Length: 129
Image 1 (cartoon, rainbow, N blue to C red):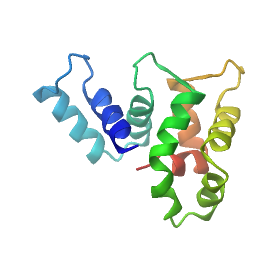
Image 2 (image 1 turned 45 degrees about the vertical axis):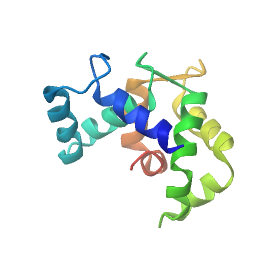
Image 3 (image 1 turned 45 degrees about the horizontal axis):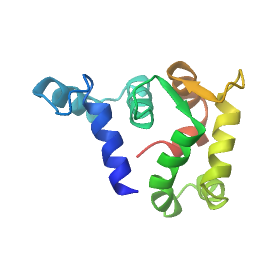
Image 4 (image 1 turned 90 degrees about the vertical axis):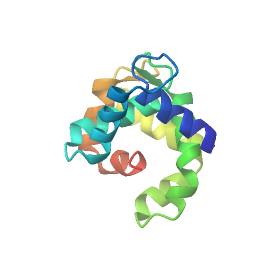
């Protein structure tokens, strides 16, 4: 799972998709890690989850990232997140999709994800690392 998470992080930082991180991309990634802006954090987290860069997150994308974060969350102080993730990655991904996929397309776009991350404490806790 760690390799998948690293690949997702790399893809999010490599914004032009050329397979390397140039100085500008490096600076932009540092900005995320230092920002106090919830919108910027939510946007960057979306980019991490959206590994293929199509600006859509599927249930499979959610399952993969949640599998990467499962052990981290099991040691969390947030009881609600622990209870949710203890039910398994697939049911947790289903719940996230049900909360954020208003049109029931099976996909979450950047706007829906950012809104959900900003407005739903559980979503924010699940996808903050």
